[in-house]
Length: 334
Ligand SMILES: C[S@@+](CC[C@H](N)C(=O)[O-])C[C@H]1O[C@@H](n2cnc3c(N)ncnc32)[C@H](O)[C@@H]1O
Image: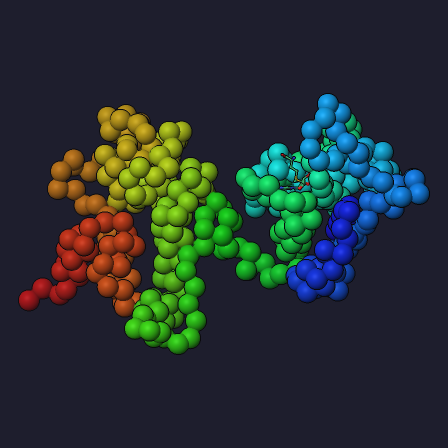
C-alpha cells in the first residue's frame, strides 16, 4: 500500500513516522509513506498557497490550484483514494480504517487555517474524514492518526491474532488485560486466566468484552456482532434490537433465556416471542418454574477455574441464587 500525505508542515511527521508502527511497516516494505509540502506546487515567488475568504471573515483559505496540482502529481495518473481531513467529515472509525486499508493508494490531505476552497473538495476529494467532534489547528495530527490506524491493518504489519480480539473488532471493546505479578496491591488476577483452560478463558474474555462494552459504550451494542443468546443476556435497557429472525429467537431461547427476557431485549411482546418460537418448531418450556440460565455442567466447569459465585453470576448474567442452585445440584447426593 502507498500513502501520500499533502501538508504545509511536513516536519511534523518526522518524529511519529520515524518511530512508530508506520516506520516498521515501511522497513518491511509493506507500506510506502511519502510526505509532501503543498508549497512545492505553488507557482509564485513567495510560494503562496492561501488567500483571504470571499465574503470577508477571519482567517485564510487554502487555494484550489496548488492543492489540485499536488493531488494530481501524487496520484500519478492512477486511481488513488483522496481523503481530506476535516472537522466536518464523516467520523473516522475502525470500519473506515478497514475500508481504507483495502485501498492500494491513499492520498491524505491535511487542511489548515480556515479550511480548503470548496470547489477543490468537490472535484478532487473522494471523502472527508473527521477524527472527532473537536477542532484542531491543522489536519496533520488527523492524517497521522489515519495513517497509523490504517497501516496496522495492512496484512503482515502486525500479528493477525492481535487484531482479532482488539477493541472495535466486531463492534465490541476488548476486555481487561493482566500480567505478572499474580497479586498487585491486594488485587489478584482473575483465577480463570491462571486455569490453563483455554475454552473457559476464551468464554470469560468474550463475556468481559460484552460487559465492558455495555458499561462504557452501550451505543456500540446495537451494531455489535452478538449471538442471539448474548444479546438476550445484555443488561436491561442496552441495545434492544427490534429486527430479529425466528432462528435467532430460537437460538436465544434454547440457550436458556426466558421468553419474557427475550421479548424485552428484542423489543417485541412476550406473546409474539412465543408464537414465533412455536412457529420455528421450538418446544416451549413451562412458563413458571422453568430451568433458566446455565446448566449444572456449565457452572461446574467454570467453577473449576476458580471463579467466585459473584463472578459466575456476572459471567452467566443470572442471580447468585441460580448459581448456588446449580452448585448444590452438582454435589453428589448423600
Ligand atoms: C482550524 S481547522 C478549520 C476548521 C473549520 N473552519 C471548521 O469550522 O470546520 C483547520 C484544519 O484542521 C483540520 N482539522 C481540524 N479539526 C479536525 C478534525 N476533528 N478531524 C480532521 N481534521 C481536522 C482540517 O484539515 C481543517 O481544514
